[in-house]
Length: 298
Image 1 (cartoon, one colour):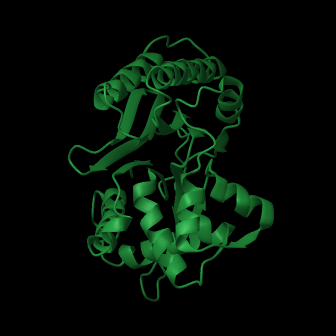
Image 2 (cartoon, rainbow, N blue to C red; image 1 turned 30 degrees about the vertical axis):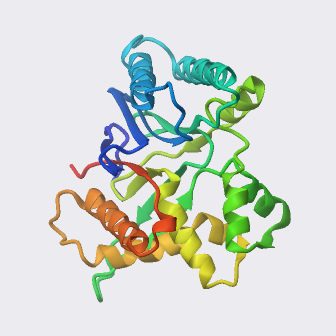
C-alpha cells in the first residue's frame, strides 16, 4: 500500500433514476472535505424535496468552505448543529401536515486529508473497501470489506440483541422500515447522541475506497440472499461484507490494469449487478445514491 499522508481524496457520485429521491452531497476545501448520501422517506405534498436537499447541501458546503481556521472538533460540532437544525425544521413540517411520514436518512464522511469520521442517521451505509496486491500466479486480487455503520432500524437492533434471527421476507422488510433515527424525527437528544457517536476512519491508502450508499443499492441483494438462506439472518449476512467482497473480486477481473478510473469502474459493476437483479424483481426496486471516495495513484 502507498503512504499518502499528504494526499487529498478524489470522488465520484451516482444516482438512479434521473430524478431520484436519493441524493449525493459533496463539499471540499482542501485539506477538508465532506461527502454524503441521503435517502428520502415518504413523498409529502407541499414540499419540493429536491430543493430542500439543495438547501442542506448549500449549508454544508458553507460549513466546509467557510472558516479555514476552525479546528476539526469545532467543525464537527457545527456539522451536528446544522443537521439538528434541519431535523427540527422537517419535524415541524411533519407536525403541520398531520405527522406526515417524511424525513431523510443521511450519512456523511468528514475528512481532513485522508482520515476522518462517519456520521449518520438511518440506514444508509458506509463501506471501507481494501484491495490486496495482485497474486503473481493468476493476477487475482482479494478484497476486504468492512461496513463502518450500523443501521438505525428495528431489524439491526434484533440482530444486535439476539445474534441470529429467523424472519420471513415480509417480516424482515417490515422491521427494516421501522427506523429509530432519521432527519426529521424531532427527538433532538437522541439524534444528537447518534450523530456524536461517529465512527473514526483510519487514513486511506491508494488501495482503499469508501463507498457510501443508500438502501436501494444493498437491500435488493440482502433480500435475494435471504431467499437462499431460509430467512436466517445474522450480523455477517445483514451487512453483506463477505458477499460484497466476492462480487468485487469477480468485478476486478473485468477491469484492465491500466484503467485510470479503477474505483468508479468497480462501483459501476456493483450498480449494474443491482439493476440486473431488480429488472425482474420490480418489488425490490428503489432509488439509489452512491458516493465513492478514494486516493488517486500519484
